[in-house]
Image (cartoon, rainbow, N blue to C red):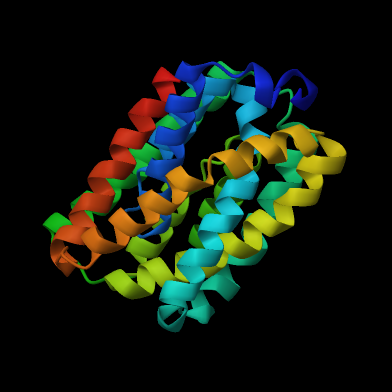
Amino acid sequence: MPQDLLFSELTATAWILALLATFVQGFSKAGIKGTAVLSVTLLALALGARQSTGLLVPILIVGDIFAVIYYHRHARWEYIGKFLPWMIAGILIGVWTGKDLPENLFKWAMAAIIVGSVAVMAWWDLRKSERVPTHWAFGGFVGVLAGFTTMVGNLAGAFSNIYFLAMRLPKNAFIGTAAWLFLIINVFKLPFHIFVWKTIDAEVLKISLGLLPGLALGLLCGIWLVRRIREGFFRRLILILTALGAVLILLR
């Protein structure tokens, strides 16, 4: 619980791992999607799984604000409108059922779904298919999973990646749409972490503030790198990083 997480008692190793985690999170918010799982894993190693879940949310919101400022003009609101209600439904399910979910069951199920989805996306790419899923059940299923996993482990990125890649969004539209979506979602999650799960308090916010330099550096490096990535390579990179993220979930 947050009262067990004290700013003054964090070791140097914990701070180094946590700063590295926020640097990677900055990379993700700048557009190198798929790296967020590594950030969550490092933060869990540094501070503990339950404590890090709440601590990361304020950091995510700051990263989302910077991403929205930089990429807002590229957002495609029609996709946010289709995906957001399903994510909210998933969050509400996660609030009431996810806190006590057996971690092994959660990890294996989520990793299997992510790997399976990435395999389907890779197959589409190999076939040079331009077909975009149009049935509401696709967005609904992926959206509820994204909402549930963002509430219980800040791990929705893999599912949003799958959805936006399936919609064939270009690089900047992908990043801008995801930036707005996750700003809305992370702000929506905040009261549940404070008042229901009680994973955020003043001490947790103090630690989050101390980790912001790592986030800022990651954002700057990520923006520099995104400018140099070609469209086709960007899509392949996100698929590879998303699949690797599924493996990292199992190793947490």
